[in-house]
Length: 199
Image 1 (tube, one colour):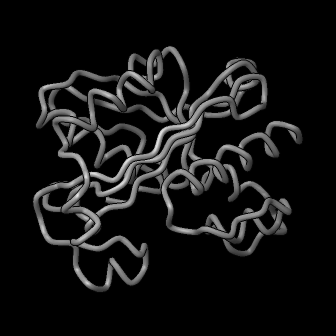
Image 2 (cartoon, rainbow, N blue to C red; image 1 turned 90 degrees about the horizontal axis):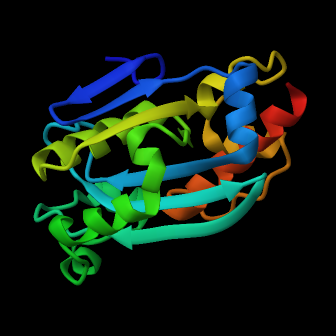
C-alpha cells in the first residue's frame, strides 16, 4: 500500500479521507486547520505503535496551540528507530499509556476528529493509518479529512525531492529538529500555508 497516494484509511470505528486543495478547502484552511505528526516503532500500523504525538492548531495562518506527548505503547522500540528519532525505551517507560494519552489528544483535536476541521501532515496517510488503528483498538470513534503536504509538493515542478526537509528548505522554513513530532507538524503546517499563498 502506497501511503503517498492512498485516499481512504479505515480501521473499524476510525477513518480518514483524503481531501484535495480547491477553492472550498483553501477557504477552510485559511480559517483553521491542525497539522500533526507521529513517531512510531516501525512502518506497519498493524504491528507497530505510535511513540510520540505532535499537533499544532493554526488559526488564520497563525499557530495558536499545540500538543505533544510521548506514548508508552508497551512494546520495544528498535535500536534503528531510536537512532532516527532519538526516542528510547527508557524515555517511553516514563511516558503515559495509550489509554491516558489518546483521550487528551482527542480533546485537542476537537472538531478535526469529526471532519469539520481539516488536518494536514507530510505523507499524512502514514500517520493517520497509525492513529486510526490505535483509536479503533481503544474504542474511540473518529472521522478525519486530511491534506497531504507531500502530495502538494509534487505539484511544484522545480522540486526534485519531496521529503519534509527538502520542501522546508525550498520554502525557506526553519526545520532544525527533524523527527520530533510537534516540530515536524509545525513545519508541515507552514508548508501548507506557503502553498496556499501560491494558489
